[in-house]
Image (cartoon, rainbow, N blue to C red; front, side, top):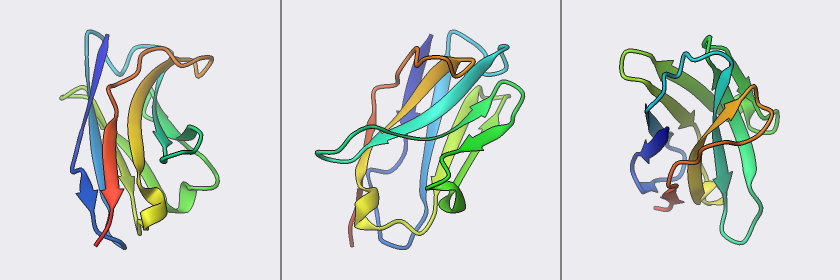
Amino acid sequence: VQLQGSGPGLVKPSQTLSLTCTVSGDSITTKWYYWSWIRQPPGKELEWMGAISYSGNALYNPSLKSRTSISRDTSKNQFTLQLSSVTPEDTAVYYCVSSPGLRYLEVWGQGTLVTVSS
């Protein structure tokens, strides 16, 4: 299985950050898999943002829930992250990650650096 994240590397403050993860080698509808977004700001720890399940249910980190939306396109075997009203504090490397049953993190995408700056 391979995960490939993509999206703009620069977003202006107050705009919406949008990233897509393309999965190859497995279907995002495979039971019991969850497909997560995790980020790591410079010099800080990893932060789980949320996930979408094999059945399409989305889960969110409560601290980000009001600004986060995770969706999927099963025809393209992709899942997406949208983070609204971004600030420079949202500057981070964003990873898409697979997880069987959310029990552990299995396969990581390569990471996408997103900088929030005017």
